Structure formats: C-alpha cells, structure tokens
Amino acid sequence: MSRILIIDDQDAIRRVLRDILENEKYQVDDAANGPTALEMIKEQEYDAILCDIKMPDMDGIEVLEQVKSICDTPVIMISGHGTIDTAVDAIKKGAFDFIQKPPDLNRLLITVRNALDKQSLSTENKALKKAVSRQNEMVGASAPMMEVRDMIEKVAPTNARVLITGENGTGKELVARQLHELSPRRYGPFIEVNCAAIPAELIESQLFGHEKGSFTSAIKQKKGDFELANGGTLFLDEIGDMSLAAQAKVLRALQENKIVRVGGEKEIPVDVRILAATNKDLRKMIEQGDFREDLYHRLSVIVIHVPPLRERKDDIPLLVGSFVETIAASMGQAVPKFTDEAMEELKNYQWTGNIRELHNIVERLVILCGSTITKDDVVHFGNPLK
Image 1 (cartoon, one colour):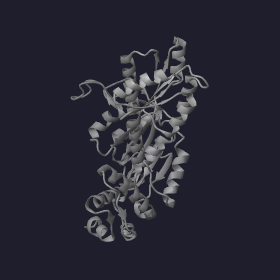
Image 2 (spheres, rainbow, N blue to C red):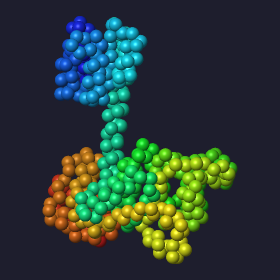
Image 3 (cartoon, one colour):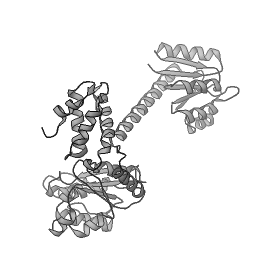
Image 4 (cartoon, helix red, strand yellow):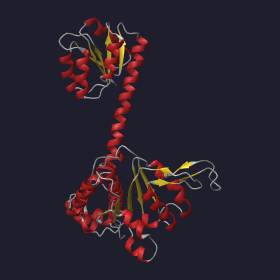
C-alpha cells in the first residue's frame, strides 16, 4: 500500500486531504510544518508528498529543496496563493507538479497516481540497475585479480584500444564492461559482437550495416554495430574467429574512424572505442597467416590478461559466496552454507572451464543439496570429472 505525507499548516486542509486519500486506500501521515515533516521523511519512506507553499517558519519551496537533498520521492506542491511564476519555480526546483487550492478532486487523484507510478518505475529501474551491476561485478581479491583491477582503473578513463586475453570462461566480458563503466563513455552504448557466433558471410553486415537491396535478404537499410556503438564502446569478442576479409574492413574503420555499409558508397563517421577479446594466440595466428599483424597492433595498444581460475584459487570462496547468494535469491530460497571441507574440495579442482564451470557447479549444488553443502555433496554432485 502506498504511503503519502501531507504537509500543511492548516488543520482543515490536512483533514480534507487525508479523508480523500484514505478513501482511495492510501496510508496517510501529515505534518503541520516543514521541520516536523523533514524529521518524518528521514525516519519513514514515503511514495509521494503533498506540500503547501505558504507556511510559517519554513515555506514549501525550502521544504522541497530539503526533501530533494534527502530522497527522490515525488513532491506535489499545493497553494491557494499560487502564480505561474511560483509554479514554474517549484517545477524547476524538482517538484513533480503544482496544484492550486482548493484542489479539484479528479486532478488531485490523477496527479497523485501519476506521481506514484513514477516512483514505482524509479524504484524498479534502480532494482534492475543494481541487479545488472551485480551480475557484471568482478569478484576477487587475489594478487592476479588485483593486477587486472589496477590495469582497468588506469586504462578505463582513456580512449586506448584494449585487447583482453584469457581462456574461455575467465570473465573477459566482465573486464570489457568494467572498462566501459569506468570510462567517460559509460553513458553511451556498450555493443557486444561475438565474432565466433556470426557466419563469415554475415559478419560485415553485422559490423557495418547494409543498404536496402545490397543482397537477397536485405529488404531494408540496416545500421551496423559500429554505428549503433557511436559515442560508446564496441566489444569484439572472439576476435580471432573473424575472417581475413572482415579484418581488413575493421582495420580500415579503425584507421579512418569511418565505415561504409555493405552495398553503399557513403562514408559514415563513427566515434567508437574498440575493445577486443580472444582465447587464441594471435601471434601464432599471425605466423600462420590467419590474423592480420597490422590489425593486431591496432587492437593491442593495451593488453589485459585475465588469469584462469586455477591461478586465483584464493578467490573461489568469494566467487562461491556471490554465486550462492544470487542463485538462491532467484529461486526464492534461503542461502545455503558451504562447510570448510566443501570449500577446500572446490579449491582442489583444476577448473578447465574456469568461472563459468564454477558457477554451473554451484548452481547444481544449490538445487540438489540442502541448507548445508558438505564435502560429500561436492564430490557426489559437483565433481566436474564425473
């Protein structure tokens, strides 16, 4: 049930507003002045606030400014002496809306509902951002991971291209996302392209887009990932699987900061930071003629190597704790505990699939075992060799 606070120095107005809102099944509190209201707001979360403008001691505009410094609850200003200038000033200072006294009942209720909808969306948005942030969080305090973090902090604020290397499942994408989130481009798009998952004949269209009629299935113009990432970051995952023809076009785009759509002639300027990742030895591929050396040097201004899990086993308890909490929450159950022996058993594995494999095994243990996960559970359900 939504909770609303009424701030007004007139008892009669507070009673009328309370009756109206309680009739709509809202929980309602009221305060006769600004200082009292501010104390209540610090102690209790409200979904919306109705605030008079003309009040002794502290007027409504000052209350509004104080509220905005405490929380982001929508504030609806009400006044019997309002002018257009007063309303504009209130809106500029963060008010959700302005209503004149005596308030029109329908207008009041519609405004309150809109304010509550906005607050609900804001709360949901924050929860989603928090969930995404947690999902993309880099977990680990081992020496190898501290080196990776240190490199990310140094490189992220720049526009330098970064080549991220490491085995499958080590978390190369998380490094790329951290580089983006800590960069000046964090408010721009982050576009990921898995070069291994796109057929060679389609990779150029995916990256550079195409014009209508440029090939059989091109029924309309399509922007490519370079254009979609404009102003942000383009992450080329598994760059070692890109065809030589596509490599040549990527190299040209990096050199000129321009692209040409498939079937087009117009050069389109792009402002994109390139991050690339691979689990392959690109130097060996260069020797074998499978990767362009000039592209390698363009991509590897900075190289960040993500260590395999077997080289950072001290991070396993932290990773398990993070995984268990997230998995249990998604299943709506209590977080199970791992015994010390169970944790040691996990640390003894070689983890050829790295963090991805660890996550899968932890999920399996959470699903199949009870509130306490023992060494026997790990051996029976979690051994990746079985």
